[in-house]
Amino acid sequence: MLATSIVVGVLVLDQLSKVWAVRELADGPIVLVGSDIGFRLARNTGSAFSLFRGFTPLLALLAIVVAVILVRTVRRTDDTMLVVALSLLLGGALGNLGDRVFRAPGFLRGGVVDFIGVSSFPTFNVADSAVTIGAVLLAIWAIRADMRERRAETDPSAGTDPSAKTDPSAKTGPSAKTGPSAKTDPSAKEA
Image (cartoon, rainbow, N blue to C red; front, top):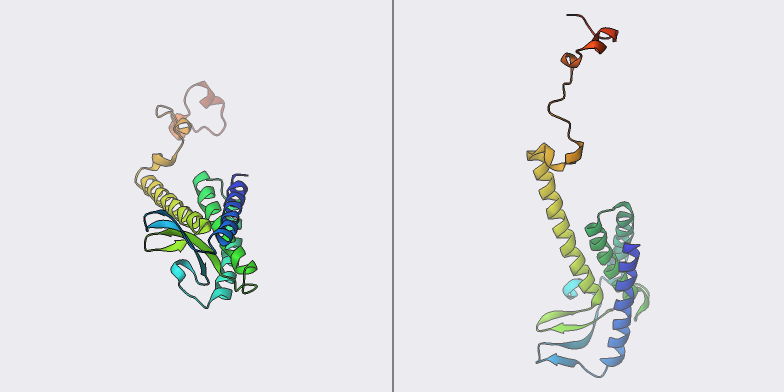
């Protein structure tokens, strides 16, 4: 349910903001803070930072493959941070994929609507922001998982449940068989 809410939330916010941008920014940019921060309409047929222009169909197909992998991975995990990270990535990927599929000039060749401008940084959109935040969370999750794994390698008790530890004074093994039950147990050996 968490994953679905995040993906749908990102998709709805992304697509509504793009509809607004196409309608309101067609006549020119809106400046918010000086000349550095504002909204300016751009169409990106490439990937991040407008790289790989001219490869829009390939990028769209790649986005479909990534979306399928993300859906399968999200369904298999119960780690909340990983679910949030992957859901943000999936929502962002689907938001930009929707542009590539449904916007002009046509199926799998559409330009992604970008409209958020910050100084000389490339123009971006809500889907791009979700992908970036998801990628940062995924990196943090991976670092934390690696740290937990290393800690468990150096301290075997680090990854165990403290309530599951055995009593160190309890006797185990062959010498544990003492007292009256040792004589009635047929597997007990006499010394």
